[in-house]
Amino acid sequence: MGQLFLASVYNVEGKKCSVIDADKFHANCYSFSGAVRSIHYYLRQGPFRVMWIGDYIIDRLTEITREEDLLGISTCYNCNDFNTENKDNNYIEKVNFIENNNNLWEKECVWDISKKYFNWNSNLSVKYEGYLINHTKKLAVNLKDYYEKSKSYTKRRETYVVDPVPVLTETGGGIEILLFEGLSAKTTEKLAKTWCGDLLQITDELPENYSIIECCFLEATSRYLYCYFNYGVNEEDFVLDNNGEIFSAVSLNMHGRRSYPCHIKARIEDNHVIFNTFHPDE
Image (cartoon, rainbow, N blue to C red):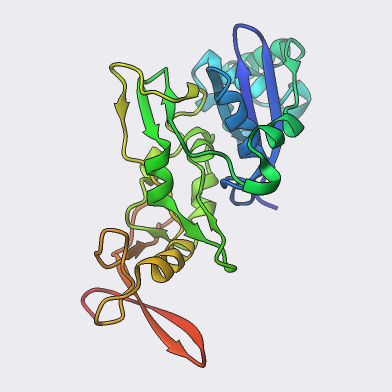
């Protein structure tokens, strides 16, 4: 069936949280996703910790080392979700910690409030303005810049982006499924999971002494569709990227290593656009 995710936003000090069913990662990690909308709403109200929690974490609990992350897991799971048979003391202690904190959370739901906040019926997207701030690491993503670099098309030529929050805060396994069919060579896939459980916020201004990072997560097909219809092709019919260079795509192997890049050539056939991939040395 594959890994299922729960998006959790939580305040450790106030013991308040909201947990949203996020289904499979590649179903609800986009600018038009309700789970993304709910998390963005909270982050525009103030600082919260965020974890996009996949259920594979149940078998990988020993990898969790921070108490803040265990608290995030406790917003979603209790002892009944874990099998402690034949597990070592480290695993059992973490399950007990999760159980002891599970009932302490005051859970909220902002599904309807967030719809009104983002004027969802008209926009069908969160706002990509201001900065996504990581207070834990003193880093930031310029959301407007992220959006401009990450625009993609659905098959109906509707504009969307992969939202940075799910990818940056996932517990593992999500980005591999998201980018299973390929990614733009500009994608910063190594950033996946690196903000999981950190204290995040969306602000209008960049705080002093915070560094902006280069960040984009781009599925190959949806991105080159956008590039073709907005930036066109060169004299050899290769799809161009937003910087005027030829669009490059890669794939990831099972170890997360990139393949050699390929380019996309477009041709018109029977009033349809046909895309083919070519390696630069072909």
